[in-house]
Amino acid sequence: MSLLKEAVERMVIGADHVHAAATVRRRQRQFVPPSELYPVGTRVDTALVDQLFYATVDECPDPHCRPLLLDRVAHDVWSTRKLVDWACFITSETYCGLPAELVDEQASADSVFRPSVTFRRLAAEYHNSKAINSIYDACTAAQLREAADTAVALVDGLQVWGADFLYQ
Ligand SMILES: [Zn+2]
Image (cartoon, rainbow, N blue to C red):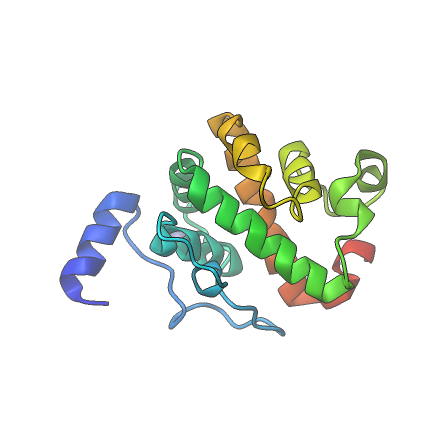
């Protein structure tokens, strides 16, 4: 990243640092970042979704960092959808399908990891790729925020725990 681009990115995000692939903490497993999951989607803010993921992996101690990134994602339907698709793809690969704990209210009540209501709803529609845009468009910023939050927390958990994550 050029110095200018880095400076601009810092200004936009409002934190005094960035999280990137080159500096991110290592986990036991390394999943592809959201920006690299095909198809990328031209309207996705790839720098933003990757920053949010890496800030989560880094367990950033700055109290403003992750919330600011989530605030930005919350106003971006395309980036939120990218994060949910990416998390559902990785989860499906890990468990050979989406576990009931991530889509079903009753099943999720017993799991240690608590997916947000909106994430469960969007994950349940994950395979319905044609009908899904309107569902995202109907979400409030707060709903998009909680879905994005769950998506990155889920992938981060899978990086640490693997398939044990939902059944610790
Ligand atoms: Zn940070």
